[in-house]
Image (tube, rainbow, N blue to C red; front, side, top):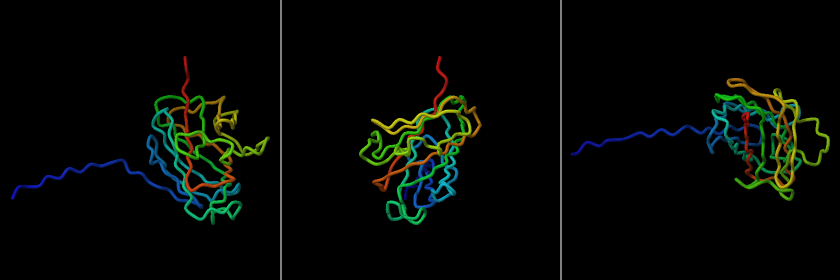
Length: 186
């Protein structure tokens, strides 16, 4: 009887982190989630800890894990109001001089006004957008929902914190946040 040879192929482990009424995944690659906590309220935001190994865009996948009930109790249902804190470790060899977040209800398609998903678009003077490393931010809503942090820097092997509110008045089971660290040019 011939001997059988087995080859073990090991793919990078994708871990799904569940907290509050959502799960968070790095399944689309390019980065690694290292922790998740919170329920999504102002007092107890959803905190996602990440490590990015390059200065290229990556996509965080977010899924509702509990029933969707707009304006229901945070943590018990996916209610469309998510106070977020993202802690990002720059594990690339380059400094990042800007950092952008873009919401997508459908992967690789910009979020539009009619989908209800935004960085708190109804609030014209937000006081819940902040970064430990950047002095300013710019929100754009049409034809996409983007939040750009600028006038600062994240050096290699340093961590930055970003706080913001995501609102979704027509909640879906899955949506995405594209994260784009920007390096100096010229």
